Amino acid sequence: MANYGALGEGWSYANGPRNGEFLFRGQVSKTGASIVVTLPLPIRLALFPTAVLVSSTAPTVLELTVSAPSGNTFTIFAWQATSTNVTTLVAATGAWVANWMCFGNLPGVTPIGNQS
Image (cartoon, rainbow, N blue to C red; front, side):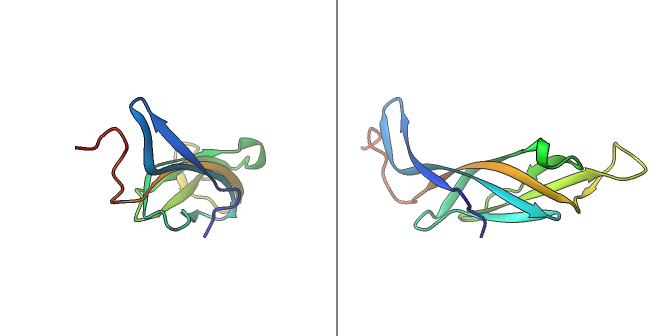
């Protein structure tokens, strides 16, 4: 579980606060190709995960991608260029640091302002 520095924040929309939805963000460091980020319970659903490479700490890593969420988890993948071809990316083997952000949702909670 990678949620070092995770911070849950309430989130508001134009029509009022949405109960049960939070913004989480944190930082992960890893040596290798991927890391799984888990949002803390009682969050049941991760929404719209993103990750940004901290470039000053990872000169060999060129690209980060994020998997589709599965429940309250998602995976961050790191890619680097091959030694022979800069346009071909392979799974990273070196150390890297990423800042991530993701919305978390508690299913079954009715948002304020959208009640029937």
